[in-house]
Image (cartoon, rainbow, N blue to C red; front, side, top):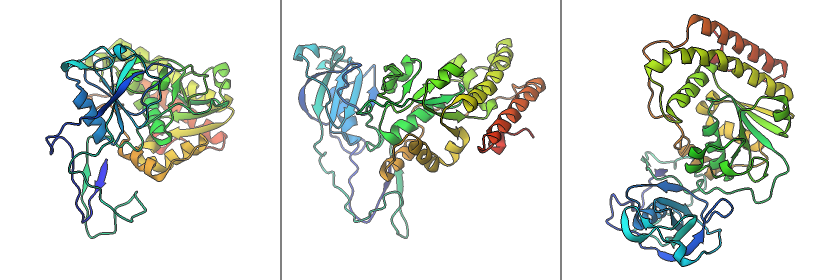
Length: 387
């Protein structure tokens, strides 16, 4: 959250400065499962020291009205309760960090109201209407806090089932998960998937478990490239990334998970050579298939998202027949990385691509660039092109 300070008092109320622990009002035990999500905001996991106070403090500091605890270790935040009550005795699991304190149950959530302001908190009043830029002052201070802005964190399923299926298609390693994160923040609606990845579901992608043709999600992740699979969608966003970086990102994922890195041994192995042979040809065939068979198509480049996020998101949300308010856009920009980006940069001391690999991949790049231009679309970004 970026906070601009004017010449008025503002009390920062994190636990770093105030020795205060939120004591909210317990309002009951609620159902929380695949069909009924009690709170639709953010989720915090702490499998060793979760307590009711920690969860309530987190939700309060993030600007949410309600805090919910489930499975003894999960903290959910939201601004409204959207599920039916359960029996009080169903919330029977102790908090991992506080024995004797109830932290929900299996598919059951203990919910607290935490909307009261903390002691000492004061609002900085202003008649400023443009919240996307600093005030016209001689100077200003900007502080970034580790608490995510509640403006864009609350997400939900589509209120009415859509009859239009939109694919979010990409080659593996192109940044599909990251773009899903951005779309969910920008629109407030869950994205879905043609597959199911339990680790992504546990990180907050609640549309992951939904049937991909349910019509309850704003778009559906897919890596498929067959004509039949493509034509099942009414329209598609095709996310493309430099194949060299896509191949390395996907190999990292296969060897070390979503946020890990492959070891030097992996990069020098026969497995890497075979991976490049198979996946580089898939990169080109995937792009060509979607360009040929998609009914309605928007091409987005990963690199353009990185460099010019706001205009790209506006184009994407317009394609999805929705709009993005300025305050939500600002919130999305502030939380752009989420928890779906590898930390740091592990630079290899050698080039994992042999001259033969590069010759083949460079030819694939020229082929896709030509196919884009044949459809009167912009060609690939210059950085893709062989030098």
